[in-house]
Image 1 (cartoon, rainbow, N blue to C red):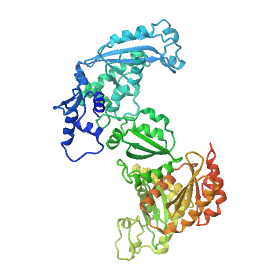
Image 2: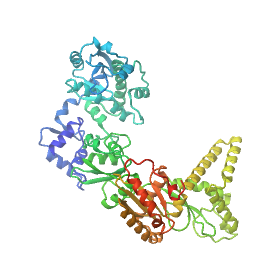
Image 3: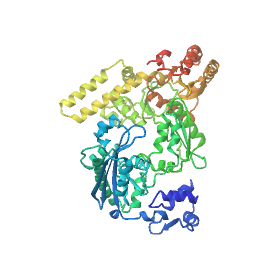
Image 4: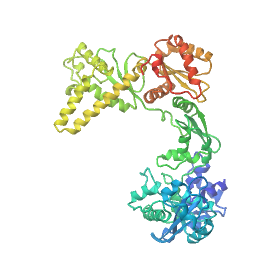
Length: 630
């Protein structure tokens, strides 16, 4: 344990607080606030490799004491290399500029004969040709001169891993610490998406001339460093050890610690699946899903500005991971929700990762149907519109649709009476106010029918009215109101497109989804009955298809009226989001009009499963193949 803590502190010259060190030892804290200090004093206090700074309240490795120098007294050498390009590329030019006291001083530059041809794209980029380096000294002569120039200075580069890596590979004794201006840019310029030399220079107002030659690039990076040193002083970073820690710190100001070697990612496939993040003792810490597992896991082990404090704390405790391929994002989402519910990992929050969907519901069987928002479907014969990206998005559509067709959106049963005072919507004319008996049942039903006709695509009068209103508002120079009318038009057009595409699924709430399994040796079937996930099965042979079809038929009636469980709500939300976001050829959907529908289509189902099992299958057939709209 001491060796582990010593390595941690050796990599962090400015030291670490007791809280940081305890986080490396314990996953959870006890209730004794003084225990941590006593524990570390006992563990480290007698070891001469460690020392505790009572002023800053930090533990340090004694080997880092020499780095506690004021930045004003530190010499920096900013270096840039040009290389031949290609595999095993060689150095063709070294350029460097010294920075001392915040000013750029002496320079170093030399072409290098790499002893191999320069790649054509490098010659076009840099302007350095084979003829230019033919008479230049070899690296064995140039490197000692550069090392002498950079002696006792802190090496700096824009993307230091590249430049320092090439210099070390060439035999340069780089024992001094290395500063990377890209890493500093991540902390000091967090709003920037691109941090190339050009992008950072432009952000800071630094001119770029003669780019892609070693000395000009080194001088640009040196100017960037001078600006960054000023910014660091403003943030209280005044010593070299603090600077070295700052460039490695995460967005929460603490060191960004990754225990998992990035080479572990080489074996992770870029496919949909579920991943488990594991602690030092193999304990499950977190369950997640991904459309592309390799990219998602790589994002954890990159010091990105988007990591929340909770995720950063998780990353610091992760020592390994395991993955499960699922074949589809839908399968990954459902497996993730089930495992979170069953395994209860400490860094997951129940329901937090579920997609947020919303629907509009029109209870057409009531005397005066109302329009309202809901987060789930139900087998109640109402008309559902959606799914929307969130309940808030559904509420925006509710506002526009209710106002346009003057439908009631208030809750509660109606007892129409002429002396009843309607709500604000009724008073301003956004609702025909059946509560105050201002509209009879037949006239209100005509409003509902007009709304349904619009959604079915058979009546464009509502859009035409909105477009005319928009044009009048624009001609009256009421541009904000005209823009709002245009947004209402776009929302309604989107709503109608979604309704025409998904109405048959949302209305029936009984359908089967078929997706290829992760290994293509089988297909996965999901049966949604009564708006909830009722059957999940892997189909490999015809016998599996028959047995699963019988199970779907058996459960059909029972799931139409059964109350929703928590697992049903999770599955329904995931299925709804998948319906909303799926691409045209992602999965096959088979509508079920009744309990016998799946039995009647057994032959089609069997052939489709065989198609999904074919290796290298092309675009999937559209849902038109099974009688549903495209």
